[in-house]
Amino acid sequence: MVVLAVLRHDQRLPDMAGGNAVSVATVRRWVLEVLDLLAARAQHLDRALKKIARQGGAVILLDGTLVRTRRRTGAANRKNYSEKHKAHGLLFLALTDEKGNLIWISSARPGRASEVTAARHDRITRHLREAGLGALAELGFVGLDDTPVIITGRKATRSHRLTDAEKEANRLVSRERAAVEHGFANLKTWRILTKVRMNAHHATTLLRVLLVLVNCEVQR
View 1: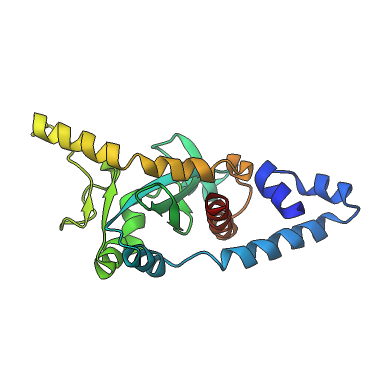
View 2: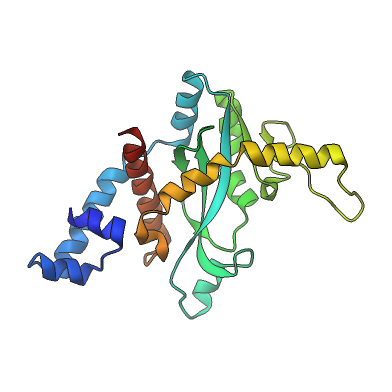
């Protein structure tokens, strides 16, 4: 219950320690131990995709989100500033099924990282091909894949204005991938994500724990 209070309501460790007549160090140890146990239950990318394929799925949804962090001074924290969101945070990629149920979350990356670079680092296109699946993604992932494994729609450029057919195709992609926002919305009901106060390693563990807990809620 102590750990759930910390995750769901972002209760501070000193408050939980005082209310349970234990030290802050003890509460911190409880939280980290439970996080490690729950994070181990999160599926790896290849297993998550193969499970979707076995269930008859053909398409998954890909998107990225910035989890806000505390703003710290100094050059070491500049990498966490996202020009896109105008805020400090950590970038995570996530995959959901067609209904918006979360199936996988990436490791944390600095907020200034691009979604395309993160997806290439995780070799998402290779895993999709191996599982025989396709993906829908937003325009931020344009250029990730030269073959039609990941469908993103088309971007207008100075030399090319979108045709009516291309605009309609973009609207169709946006409509079909809208469910991925439900996955992120379920994740961010856990108030500890309001502003994360931990390093990238522990933030990765935290997000994978919340993935497990969100899926438990959905399946109840």
